[in-house]
Length: 291
Image (cartoon, rainbow, N blue to C red; front, top):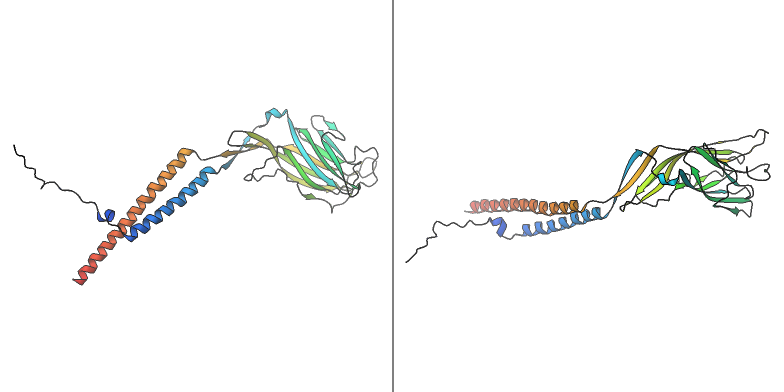
């Protein structure tokens, strides 16, 4: 039995020349694509590794486990008032009235004992009130108390050390009243804003930002004496600011990388094909002119 096989009707379709013929243009485009893909990959990788901070506002008391208290840290220098005369008084609308608070506080003499630096940590209730530095707790009132001062720190709640969060957590830090009237009282009116920071692990830290306005005036007692003080009058905002750390999901990163690689080579192939076709057409035109 003999069998004749005829292959005349079998046609093998050739690949386009622009896909098989090496060219300098194609090599240049391939190298350029690799560099471009590497650049986009590193950019996406940096964005994937880095975290972004998303903020939101809502009405609530975020730190319900605080027992209705806010921790305060105060650091203030009075260069012309003796430490025996300096005291901290606290009062609020819940009936608290404390004169000469000394718990968790420290007085550091300045200017060879003529001045004082007061550092203290204490808690206040979450209701409107005030705390003030004055001579009210001194056993003997001075004739001319000098209330010129510099505030190094006034902060509420936990300390947040996050570079991407630029808030007014120590708005009065660096306030200098050394050139003011020595007998003047100073009113710092604070609007405290609860602030929550939640990291990638879900851990929350509670702090407080605040805005401040101040005025300066001379106050007289009922006996006509001038009794200056440095007042910090505060009120709480019902609005809470929340900062949340977020990172790009892994599936989105992989999808983006695939899109970068596939899209780059697709566009590069189209560009290379167009350049090759134009080059071949130009060669045919030149050969036609020569013949």
